[in-house]
Length: 377
Image (tube, rainbow, N blue to C red):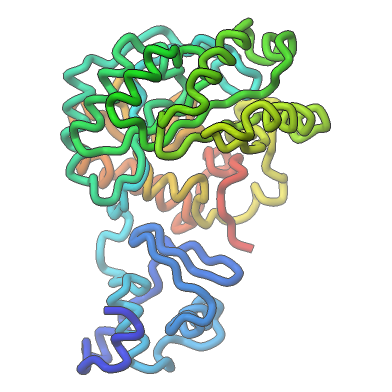
């Protein structure tokens, strides 16, 4: 029941029951909005119930003093919850990273692969499909099944077949790539399948020598041939070209040059500064020391990683976050557990409590070093 409908609805729960409810501890509280990652709903300034919820959160006026109908509607819409429920076991699955193999053919300065390449391993097709079968139960909420975390998906011998498999389960395939393996033949095959849901290629420069220096391989001419072929094809519903750099003048010049070459293509060219991968890398955007000392209050890295994402390694292990390259925070194993068991496991519940400040996180917890972490104060 929405707040608007509550204004004219019959009496709801008993007053005593409503007074037992608390604001969901996993809310994201912004300057002019409150977002609930467990319902994917936003309450904006001016919306019915917004002022009452914000006043309660700020300690200005308790919800006990708010109109009963407003409080009832806030509960019905998920803003208020029963504190006795298992609140840490909940999730709202929007994004999946299902990495089919460990191999990357570059060594980019902005990626942990450049420091510690992984041993080659490919997930068996039967394991891949078994995971997709479980994911299909969440197709209503899943917005993308990404085929990458730290690999290069287009060099997988079964790349096109895996795309076909994802689509066969009614799921939206997403590919982030360096473009080196996106041959014209693969582009044509993907178009024939009806295209991807999302495709993003990272391209840092049009200068061949600088490309080689920053990525460890002389792939620029190959990449440009592939992208020139794909530029006007319906490769994906959304086609991004991300110009990566450190925000300096050279980065800006590279962005302008790439815009000039691909600005009239199907690619939307975007400027993007690299980050230090939660302290793993010596370059990129970093967290200020002052922020590291604050209490954690959630995550905003393309939604909430603890509540809305699933990160599956090629070995079918589930890690807590995409930034966890070394797999320090493994929360489950899909070789032996179901998807539901992993996403409601004691391991992930503890890390959710840490990342949202329900319990004080250790000083070396990954979120403390991440620029995308939300904090109190």
